[in-house]
Length: 302
Image 1 (cartoon, rainbow, N blue to C red):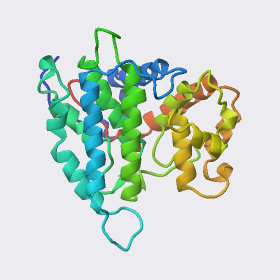
Image 2 (image 1 turned 180 degrees about the vertical axis):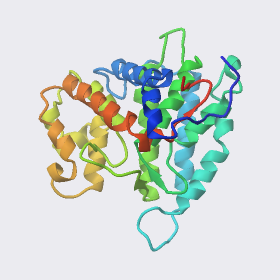
Image 3 (image 1 turned 60 degrees about the vertical axis):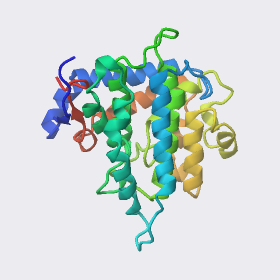
Image 4 (image 1 turned 135 degrees about the vertical axis):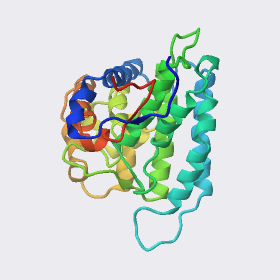
């Protein structure tokens, strides 16, 4: 591994998109999330591949951010969205980022916290705009990808911890970001076209569709709020729908038209395949989202 360095932006104009889409980083990222999805095929949240030291520390770090959120009260302000107390929470989170990332590393990867901390900080929204979107969610996955490339998840027993990265770590991350989004009334980042599944997230649906393969639930059950609520602790997809039903009003077919359309797909495998195509086209290939990505010696632009 080359010397660790602070990552920097490389996608500075739409002309750089083609380089990004042919880069090692892009392929590594797509392979990583595809592999995570395969690892949870037909597996509920309660199933894991066994914790290792790094996963335990990661879960503690996420719990710490949730506690900081509980302790950092929203302020009284005239505007409804973008509570300025988020910036206080963000400062507390980022102040401890390098130290918390250093705890995750083994001896051979010491020093990598200078790269990891940048992705960790960018996983929880934007301080100046007080917004959150799929680009921030992507940064969290790049953070996990970098840790994986550094070999900190390997265990003698299971070979890897991919299932736990989704069912334990990503699930915990979703709990934290939803808490922060709601508490500080964060704006959704960017504009949302007809492709949008959710104001903020995409990957819970992709991983969740994989989890639901072979379950008693079918895509046609997506609009059933009672079924989704009943299964929210078991499946990421159900938790995402349940959250939408809590924050939005009106007919499901109107406030979540894309998800309503997905409910007509015959089986979860086809849903998952369609979501990956959608993710590549509407998130990974969009300049307004990927222009903010950072590249260093672990996540390489070359």
